[in-house]
Length: 457
Image (tube, rainbow, N blue to C red; front, side, top):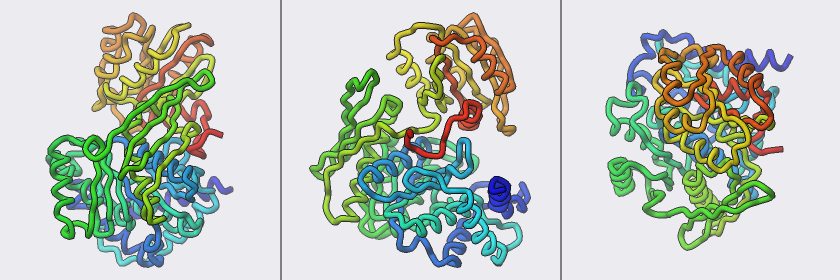
């Protein structure tokens, strides 16, 4: 019964958006989106964000991992932490969490009904709509208020300046690497994209922690900081590689590997112990540590050392071993740079059996780059699609794969592809599942991998 109610609640979140014609939806976000309706809704519901300590995360790459890492660090520091991320991988309710645990179905239904009733009373002009992610962010703010969280981390969508989630009042912000992406929505130039992301700096923001950026993005960001009260009163900006660095010390731990990530801020040592699955994210960890130090400073009035253990943290679908015998590794790899981390993971293992890769790389993703990094490690390749009907697969994967291995198969049905891979594998083999986030969700569902918590039980 509750599953049916949750499904109906999810449909209600998309109802306003679904009534807008696709013609009106087309265009740059600055021309067609109206995030002010999210602010209107928050106001109607008593401004639940007004007295909350919120941190917003924006950028082009790694928003989800930065948000999860910061929430995890703050939780390990003894705080009660709300976390809002999007999209989900397996369960829609993954988007709203407190202390890493996703919201219960009954609670989700209750908040969805509260928001829906207010939306139905809105004086919405013809052709405008409430953005679904904005409605979810409002629900999250209500949920976090009622759960009496100490701090909340909100992952924004593709932009910031015209993003619904950015309407949530936030005191701090994290900026992940900014790339020339979504040019049809945020562009037309890379600078336009950067300026959209910089919209996360609202008048409420007192500090922003940035990952290393391209030089002109960094220059533009620092110019905004220099603007002072023109952007945000007393704004401070700290960037990885300019204001703080990161060091990593690896060690063995009961047969596995862990690493201690260390950085400093204002003379204080910030440290986190991470599992090997998080090794590709050491820069993200450093940014999250400095962000967490800012939160603790704001809450306590003093700058403190930070020393946390994150070995029990799980970033779903990011270098995640989802099964043993055969060893099945899952990663949201869609380009060459991500594939390098899988290659490093393979290098660290003693090869006892065969290695097969089951890849889902639709048009627009860097299939040649992924194969360039992984092809030499693989004994066979299997290309598949995902259940997301919006993805297109028009490459000749047979020809592409034969440049690296002699055994290449193509099976469009993702469920059949997974079954084929398992049927042909032995206990000592390794299977690499890599592709889009939609594909990652398909694989997690197929293996019935739990995603209710960000922590390993």
